[in-house]
Image 1 (tube, one colour):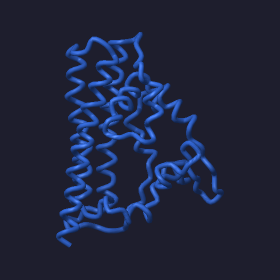
Image 2: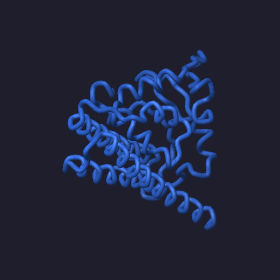
Image 3: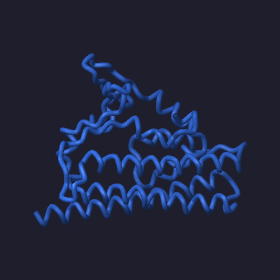
Image 4: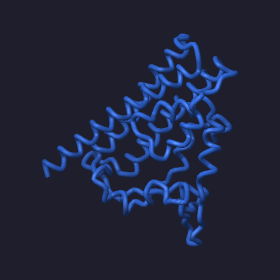
Length: 220
């Protein structure tokens, strides 16, 4: 999908099994999850367009910190977003190739497969592969994540997650205008700005969501 320029289709490879429930407004959890995946698709599509524009403006440049960036993906913090996002924008194919070399898939023979990252369970075991009628997909073990205090439990919380993704995309759209306006003299400078603007948005949106969940728990 990435090689074909269809980065916006990547969420199709994520399988989240919804509960068979409907919220007060009649919206099902399946619809709420679909809305979040749609927003994620739009965000990834925007990211890809920005990357294409950067590569058009700076066809002969690479980000000096690319090798360092790909080594920090597994334990990225808000301070590392500059290298992670910048590395992807600079050369998405090399970036993904390096990650692929760090991943191992173990077929468990029951329609599921374990995902290892650097020989350890990916994301603490909260990621697996499952075989569906549409092929293998990245599965989220719903029985595990629903016990997390941050997993959306209400229609409102799912809507907030969708709004968070929209907020990050809006930040990326601001950056895209800077790129098309010729604000950067080098790919490294542009990548640094991309990492900061996206990273700051991720942190802000995450704090808002965490505070909302905390207040909801206190109300209960």
